[in-house]
Image (cartoon, rainbow, N blue to C red; front, side, top):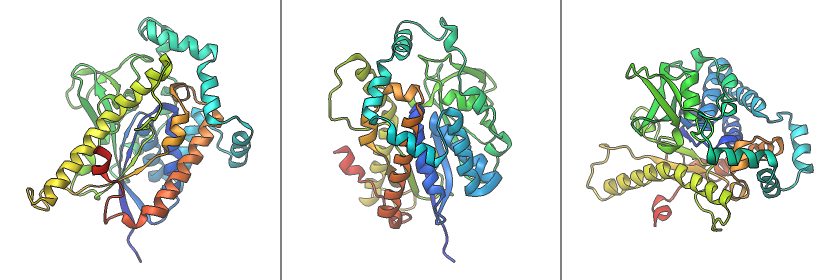
Length: 346
């Protein structure tokens, strides 16, 4: 009997584009050779992580996949495979749908409101529509010591520092804080169990999208699989206001991830040069699953407004990307990185 290949997952946030991660997770969970040891998630990544953990406690990998389907059906996805395929086949291309969505009067009005008002002056923006969904998670399972370790990233508004919630610290408020865009929702305020003070939190993407450092613990596996949903590279320079804002969002939400990946590469070079003895610091093996081509066709409108055809394509793209990763790099797990960090930063 062979031992499963243990991995850590780092799940980025990106609003409705988190449906790509849904597809990635669905494919990984279908592989009997892979065991998820820990998950660090921000925003949509935190929701996906909580769904996986609670589902696995209830019903193993099948339970996790069912819980992910439930989560995204509540967000707006169609989970019937036949109907999903039909919707996707009769819909325009993703790029056309993205451009059409951002020109609708409803989105234009929302975009204008976010530029000139705050959530504190617009009552319609106060209630996070994710709250009824997040509150239905089984927190005895989300916070359980069994199953994959779960880390949820948020940003402390007062200090500007990252706050990583884990174990019994994870609550509906902690997950909503991780997904709190300050131009759309009021800061999520609650008593931080670590300080005993009322703290305000914003989206974790500003300080850790997601945080990688919780996954460096010695008892966790060396392999870290990043599911990236914010394109690192866009060849075209944005020209209009919405495209510029979208690229600003992508760059800022990738900054913390790139900083941590650079640190991993720096430590690796120190070990390879003999400046740090092997074993003193962890040799993290980095892998990445992404589909920048699809994400380049989408925009901030498709992040903020879940659209069934787009969600279906994102899930399918995530499944395909995970399948390619497992075909090409499953043999690398436990042995070597499949991402050339040095080339990434040259």
